[in-house]
Image 1 (cartoon, rainbow, N blue to C red):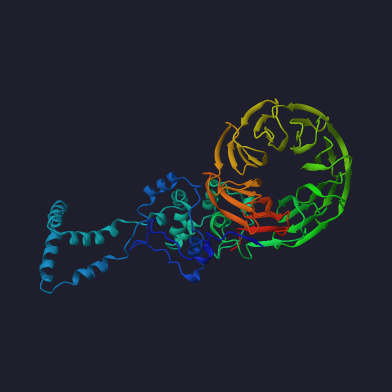
Image 2 (tube, rainbow, N blue to C red):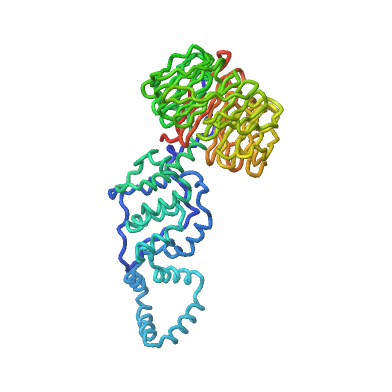
Amino acid sequence: MAGVDSSRRGDWASNSSFNFDDQSPVASPVAGQKRGTPLTMDGGDSTDADIKRFKGPLPPCLSETASSAAASCTTAALSPISTCSTSTCEEEIEEVSPFLSPAIDDWLSTFSGWPGEHRNQALQKLIKICDSTQLKNLMEKIQPQFQRDFISLLPRELSLHVLSYMSPRDLLIAAQTCRMWRTLCDDILLWKEKCQQCNISEAVYGNVGKKRTCSLVYNPWKDMYLTKHWIEYNWRHASVQEHPRLKILKGHDDHVVTCLQFSGNRIVSGSDDTTLKIWSAVNGRCLKTLQGHTGGVWCSEFNGHVVVSGSTDRSLRVWNADTGECKYILQGHTSTVRCVAMHNTTVVSGSRDATLRVWDVDSGQCTTVLQGHLAAVRCVQFDGQYVVSGAYDFLVKIWDPTEGTCLHTLQGHTNRVYSLLFDGTHVVSGSLDTSIRVWDVKTGQSIHTLVGHQSLTSAMELKGNILVSGNADSTVKVWDVARGYCLHTLHGPHKHESAVTSLQFTENFVVTSSDDGSVKLWDMKTGEFIRNLVCLDGGGNGGVVWRVKCNEHKLVCAVGSRNGIEDTKLMVLDFECI
């Protein structure tokens, strides 16, 4: 039975306190001014709940300079203000000995008759003869008289401009001051700006945790910001050992899961049992079983509506993902279909017969055959303009799929090419010769040779100039492909103990799986190990994690074994669940 690491249980849902001792206290409205209405539980306040969602370290998405810039313009508004009024102070003054009261009255009468300069001189002499306790008491009485809640006094536009320099955490604290501050700190455009500063996409987080807050007025941008923080905290700390955060999906018996796709709320798994299955990532149910191949499924692509699969039966099949119906059987290859890539309605397949074929999925017709490799085609990429293929003949080729011509043959590897990436500008190829090469797609020239791995590069992912590679030597490396050097090597005492089988990375994390039966989480920026997300009971004795796929809030793992020690299944870990 699979287990999920619980050594770092820190689920904030079970902890309702948060220490804000390092924050500046928030002002109360000044005595004598028009005060905002205090927040009450029956007024629909959710600020305290929002702050509780801010447990853990604040994501480093806002610069410290922004918060420090706010300090100079909000000091007066974010400091303790006594609610003592002038009348209260007069009452305290009158609570003196009846023997001293006449003398004090006479002195005050005389003091009132002096001109301003004489008053200042008298006060200076008075201060000199006071001890520290008396001076402290004097300060407590004087200080509130010079403080003003200027945020409430300024025009709304200026108030929001001042608040825009505050960090999200400070905004949550400031919102507890009074209703006026709450209204300002909950401004939609203010939180939209915070989301933009952090590159929080409405497309990604807009529907995740929607309307989680209990506020009377829903602020979608604020909720997106809090949701992102919540999810990041859960990736790092939350226990995912129990339902509803962990779902187990069984359906391929004891067979190997050879390919895995994850799009939206649906998962597609392919197996050497000849079937593919479509699953709900929400409830874990099997929605459709795609049957028809007569050999094991080796590759698949899924665009949300159409599934394309390749098999050892030498055919491809095009499936309707909603109905499970097989629309077309694409025949033409004379050996196993080993890899497939899809862009819009065009599919490119690579086979052990050393050819690639270009297909139109709307008609089911083969439009082009790409010939030129001398051995099995192992990997293919397609961006709609160029086809890039890697093969066991040590070569990488760039093709024009419309004309069916080879534009460039990239030579340099000294062994089989097993992995390939293409972003429209760069081609990245991984080989059994232990190297990774970066090529210019326009010229076909080698830009960099990335050296450091000791074996086959089995998994890679490229985003912008950042490449993450997983290797059979059990290490993972983070590279800058523009400059051609290694930023981090993810190893150390917590490194994988066997070959890396799959990986994914996001803005903050790298997720890696291995033949050792574990899934590990690493810090993308520092390269440091964070924790084990999955540790199979059979890990090290045959239990394997074959594939991982993830988005911002879910992780899907295909696990099993080749000796029966671990059941074949999909594990879905949901980091958005409470």
